[in-house]
Figure (cartoon, rainbow, N blue to C red):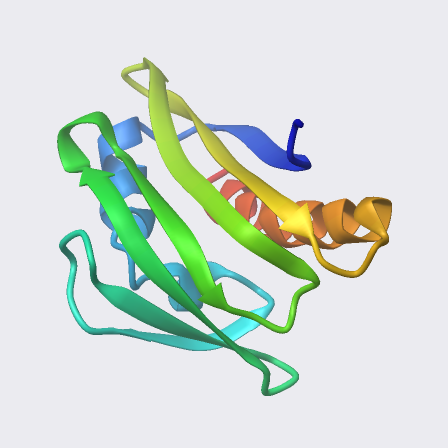
Length: 140
């Protein structure tokens, strides 16, 4: 059975390495995602956990599964979240197009826990898209 999938992408007029330095750190998402007020992490290696605090005060805890700075991507899982999802696995990736632009891709696969798969996909899709759009606007 296929799991629901959400994805957000954008072309950004910044080279991939520069954008990775801004957004590639596992703990940096709180500094640029408009729905988050802060994040804290206990490391930067696989197994590290980050706690993200949303503007409404809710929090989610995520665990870094894999990171590859040379290829500018990391994969993580969701340990606890107020979102109606389980078995959540996401990947954050920045791929070069040329020396002055790149594509950011943020994807997630998960199981909807609310029984409302479309609502869960919309919620996750909106979260990913808000983050990607914020990076695009900051680096346009």
